[in-house]
Image 1 (cartoon, rainbow, N blue to C red):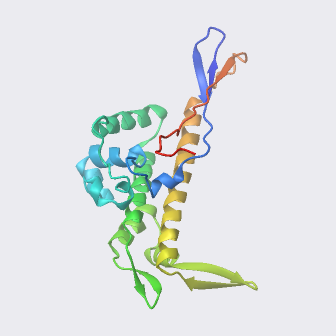
Image 2: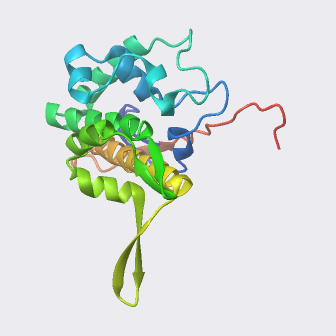
Image 3: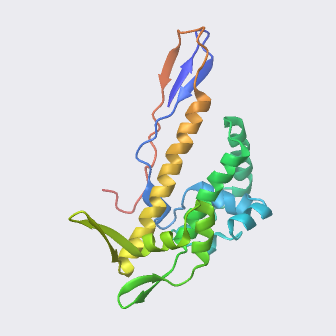
Length: 227
């Protein structure tokens, strides 16, 4: 993050660059780790009518993407209070209600994607319940049948012709997880760009300012064997 200061030394603006987002955390966590905080904050702190509209339950144990690390709740973290902080921050940054609603729709859709269950029909993957597809269709604004096909088939282009080839169970699960990571990753980038718009220094009367660059080295973890 670049922090801009005016000639008096007061911070007046900034710019964030995001890179190496740990998208794998969206679909899998090591033992003792959690997914990204916003998922737990939404479930624990979201208003009842919001959760009802998003089709979410106030229980992180119900979502496959939140239980891989076996610690959906952490005693030192108050997700309910953190949700209030995030909601206030979004308002300060300049999000309007429609943008917040769209953001929550996408966060909820990732949880619903993780709960899409597959079965097998003659070695081809098929979705065994359409409940999640109904929620995803509404939250993402996409056609349910098109989404179902995308989660169970792959498109092959041969000699200029498009062919749809069915996926097996393992391939379909990987496709679902890849979509979840892509949706979250693009949303994260959009969020950073939105924050940057809010942080932009727009005072053209003072063209002289100093910049301090802050590099956040994050993600160091302790393993039994760290290579």
